[in-house]
Image 1 (cartoon, rainbow, N blue to C red):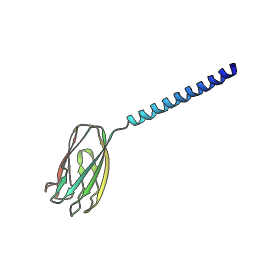
Image 2: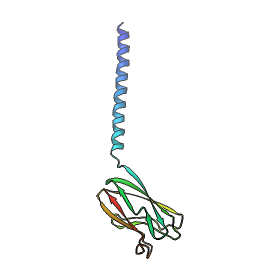
Image 3: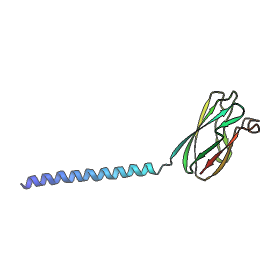
Length: 130
């Protein structure tokens, strides 16, 4: 009888130890994921007529932004956010480029096409960080 109780106690102890290790492991994983900034995907398209679509974009402060820039126009375009030091490559018609950045501070950040004459023709917009 005492051997049976010892075996049951060993099994119970092993189960409790396994449960404890599992709980500690899951807490560590949750903390690691919770500590990472949220990711927001934004697509801005360069249109014919020297326009960005959309010309106004909103994202929450502290999020990681994945900006997908597409060129639906007929000439080369890029997108530059000077205050954030963010700039895509100049891409040809039908091309795309992706840049990633994080903005911690709320505010309104102007963006524009840096190809000579394009911003002056109206190719600009705003990124609003809330």
